[in-house]
Each structure stands twice: as structure tokens, then as C-alpha cells.
Image 1: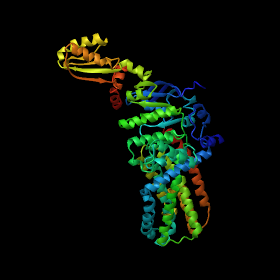
Image 2: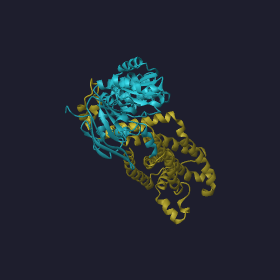
Image 3: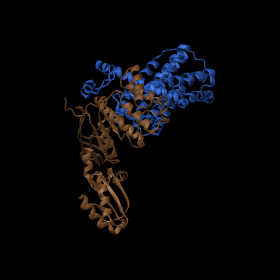
Image 4: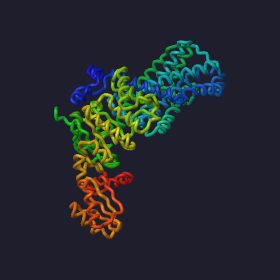
Length: 283
Length: 323
């Protein structure tokens, strides 16, 4: 695919357009390097939009502050005996929930974006079909980062003292960001399938609530009835929450961390191609 | 490769559910020409264009652009065609400069080159002053110009323009026409759709008239117009009862059959040459027949349609609404 780089680099405004030369220069698909450049250009577009519409950050700012404090003081005594005993359980759980909320926004925003006229141009340009999907997701890494750090800071402010130290915290936040980004492919796929942004929102809610509440995010799995415990144990969110707990509280890279990462890879491998295929068909 | 066609489409078909939007259209666009697709709303013009631009799957038939198969090689087609849509396909949340930069980067231009070409295009389309303003402050004409500029970044050999001047004021429309003519002198081929016979007449070398998903005629604008007469002389007689006498005068002078509306004393006379209008007026005065109003009208799309299909262009949107 080296031919393509020469095509674009050497266009010092020729006098006349030459169709046969143009045909000879065409390529049958974007190379990996071209695709990467396209994804970065789309990511930069998404960043510019974020800067211009800061209200998009509402969810990643409010939810960590509000939910962390609220859940800690409401459920702390009932579940763990005291607020300070509950925090090591709760903070990783809230972190997972926040990441999922951001994922949901990814799908909804993609759907909104796709209804705009500019997507017609994206479709008519010779770019890899994954670029318009993956670009915004790269920009969203910032949102996962903000949401995770803010949750952790709120926890620290109300008395959480993670035993894992700085390493544990950094690793836990990193794992949250990776998981959020991977799970976002599910919601991106939904975004390409659904008819409207509202329906993406509705479907996402129906996925998000069972995934977070039917996990070990807020309560110990052992307290649940057997059939529910069985589901909770296979729920990928549970693995992410357990892994982040191990990192935050003990600074330990356990098997749960491995399972969480395996889960992320599986989700991306399944849903990224599905999303690209459904997006390509939509035109 | 000298006779390589810009577009060669054979019996294109597009179905939306059980509605056949495009029903076996053939198009043959030669290199370096402006080819117009003329038709009313809902005739299938935009659908045809979108199929050729790989924006809609082709349901039947075959299409090639510069010899490249549209269905089999969409990525190559996208490198050959610049598409300017009916509704400006630019990013509303970015500035004009950022839009051009983005589209240039997406097409693989290196960062600095993307920046210079964005600057060049902004200048060429008279958008430098507005370059860094949000698009929400742009007028319809500015948006169209930005949209067209965005299609020209890689200087594609074929440019699709979907109703490039619909909704523009006459002055902006004239500017757009000049720009389109310039593109052809650069060696590009242009396929444009329009609802206006006037626009096809001004720009196109050849025109295909589309009606209800079918091609009903294909010719030069001049040939199409002669099918309905170049223009029409519309007269109202001061005394309606003179109309039979007046019709005789017209027949004698022009050899044309006037269309009479005896109730209101009006008559429409097809004019092969607008200069002959004077002959008719002088003839009527010599016959002592008074006139209350007179006008010369150019043939409209509606009249071309009526002549070609036996029904007016206005029927179409109603049919569209009914389905």
C-alpha cells in the first residue's frame, strides 16, 4: 500500500484533472496506516466538539460526585456496618457504573451525529468505515479518565484510604478506562442499529441497569439467592469490579485482572466488527 | 482509453419497499461535459446520484465510473467522485477552515498540505473572512460554497452536484454557475441535478429529463426547448369577442396554432423566435384589434414536462405525498 502515500503527497495543483491518471492512483481499500490517520482526524473532530459543548461533560462530572456520596451514606451502614468499611467495596463499583454511563453516552451521541448531514460526506469519502466510529471513542478516553479520577477523589474526600497505594489507584483507573472503552463498542453497535438517539438511550438503560445492579458492584455476591449469584459471577462487570477492588485495596494484580482484560478483548473482537458492518450497511 | 466515459449506467433500479424510485435509468456522461439531470421533486434524480456515489446500494442494473464498477469497487469510486449534496454536508459544529482541514486529513493529505489547501479553497470561494466563524452564522450560499469546496480538496475528475442552487438568491446562483463552469475548464466532468430548465440551459451540454424514476428524454437543452417552442407570447385582447379574428392573424403571420381561452379573451402563441412577437403585435394593430396586456414567457420545466409526458411537473409531489 505504499502507492497511496505518494498519491496524496504529490499533488502540487496540477494544471488539469486527468481522469485516467486518477483511476490509476485509486486503491481498493485504506491501508492500516491511512486508517489510523483517519481515526485520529475523527478523534480530533470529536475533541473540538467537546471543547465547544462542555455540557456534554455533565454526566461525567455530576454522577461520580453525587452517586459516590449518596450510595456511601445510604448503603454504608446497612451493607458493611459503617461508611468507612463500605467505601473499599463501593468505590470500584461506582467506578464501573460511571464508566458504563459514559459508554451509553458514546452510543447516543454517535446516533445523533449520524443523523447530521456531515455523515453523508464521511460516507462519500474514501475512508475506512471504522474511522467515524473509532475516532469519537478515542476522544472519549478523556471522559472515562475524568469520570474515574473524579470518583476516586470523591471517595478519598469522604474517607476512603485505598490500601493499594498510588500504583493500585493508577492501575485501577487504567483498567476502568480500558473496560469502559471496550464495552463502549456494544453501545456503538447499538448506535449504528437503532432508529433514533432516544431509542439508543432506552435500550442502553435496559442493558446498563441489569449489568451494574446484577453484579457485585454494590453488594457482596454471597448475600444474593443462588440463581442470582450464578448470574452475578459470570457478569463481566463483576470481574472488572473485583479486579479494580484488588488493585485499589491491595495493589495486587490478581487473576481477576486477567479475566477482566480477557473480557474486554472478547467484547471488542465481537462488537467492533458488528458495529462497522452495521454502519456500512446503513448507507 | 480516450473514449472512456465518465459515467456509464445501464438500467439502474432502486426500490424503497414496494415503491420503485428509479426504474431502469440509463445514463452516459462523456468526459469533460456538464450533464444535467432534470426533473421535479421525487422524480428519482437524487436517488440516482446517491447510487452512483455509493451512498445507496444499487438494486438493479450496472454502473461504471471511468470504467470502475460502482458496486464492486466502492472505495475506488469514492476516490474519483466529489459529492455535493442537496443539503450542505459539512460539520455544523466546526468552522469552515476546520471542516476543510478535516476532510483533507481524512483523504490522507499531510497536516501542512491540508492547511494550505484549506486556505487556498477558502480564498477561491470567497470565504476567508468567515473562515474561523462558526457555521451557524453562515448564509445558505456560503454553506453551499463551503460544501462545494469540500468536494474539491483532492480535485476529483468527476463531481456530483445535487441541486446546487436550490434555495439560493439569483445573485448567489449566478456565482455558483460561474464556479461550476470553471471546474469544467480545469478538466473535471460534472453531473448535476436540477429542477430548473433555466439552470440546465445555462450550464449543461446535455440533459436527461427524469420523470417517475424513468428517463423520458435526453438531448441538448436547445433541442429540448424547441420541442415546446422557444418562448410563448401571451396576449389578452381588449375585446374578448375578437379572439377568432386575432387567431387568424397569428396563423397568417407565424403559421403557428395559438392556444385560445375565449372566456377571458386570452391567447398563448408559441414563438419559434422571440423577435416575431413584434410581427404579431403590428399585425393585430393593422387589423384594428386592441390588446389589454402582453408578455413573452420562456418555456418552464412544467411546459417541457407537459410536452414530454402529457402531465405537468406539479403532479409529482402529490404522488410522493400519497405514498
